Length: 112
Length: 113
Image 1 (cartoon, rainbow over the protein chains, first blue to last red):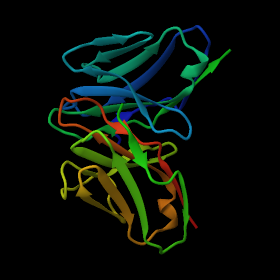
Image 2 (cartoon, rainbow over the protein chains, first blue to last red):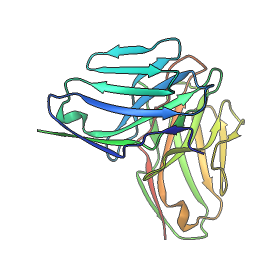
Image 3 (cartoon, chains in turn red, yellow):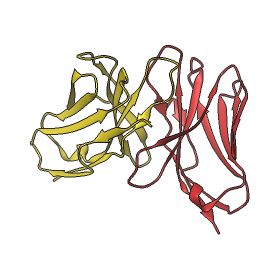
């Protein structure tokens, strides 16, 4: 039972344009969401997070949007750069729990 | 900067062997985690520990055990390695609730022949 789903295994975007990565979840108890970025042969690194009391969080070129009614979150990267090429994982947890539930990942490729 | 160090980047073992994967963190974190990453499946939690000598099963604990004798070190043990345990193994640590995200090591690519 996949509680966190990333339905697009891959995404290709031109340099300078917007990249939008999507994530859906099924567990309404989740109240904290994160995005991680992973390069080959490295561990995932934390990118940005959002609490369920917000619907948007921004950090430089990265913005995460949360739509609780649709149980959907998205990561926007503007403008996209070649160094953004990586696998992106969304993850979710609920208050008091230390466990994260991860999606399957989306491989983002930024083309020059 | 948080540092999570996994003892091996690549490991090749044979079916039936007992395999130890080691992880050390330097941030005095209470929580430590072991995941495996497989294509199309994302990261799946094997075991985690929220204190020394404490452990809890994750989503896929079968065939694995863990040990946490010291706060900074968390070991994953494959009791009798099988080919379906060939995978990328990732260790992570975090502080108490609300103290920030999990920080990951660079992973161990384990091949069971």
